[in-house]
Image (cartoon, rainbow, N blue to C red; front, side, top):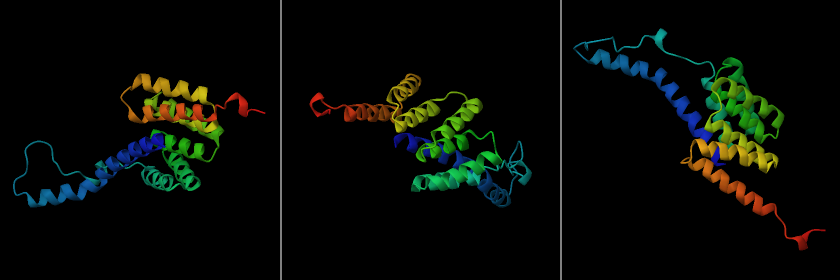
Length: 182
């Protein structure tokens, strides 16, 4: 869950920052009209052709919204649309992978994580997300390896630390005393 929150917070921040560019244009233009003296240096008014728009912004935003609501199938459709529109959008690939994880389509999640790694490299976020994916599958050894590698890269990350605690709790939960075994 913490991995999901970290992923969503990162993606929301990226989306918010991208949205700021499109929202900023009218604000800058309004300020330029009010200011009687033109500032020295480059023109602060951003022309519409200068605004960077990424075709995957809206589907990623909608995918995150649906993921947060627990509608993983709908989120998967939005993230898939995002990667089709912008195949180099790492955030969209990670969102797609996380959606596939929740839908228990681990084969497709692995492909999406692979694409995210090809585009953005092996990051702390991807390692943490892959660890969570392995934990969902019940492959606790692989999950531990991914979490520990992520932790070695960022030992102050509370999401990774919490996922390691969750993993440790999962191990204790499934261990049964010998007298309870058939």
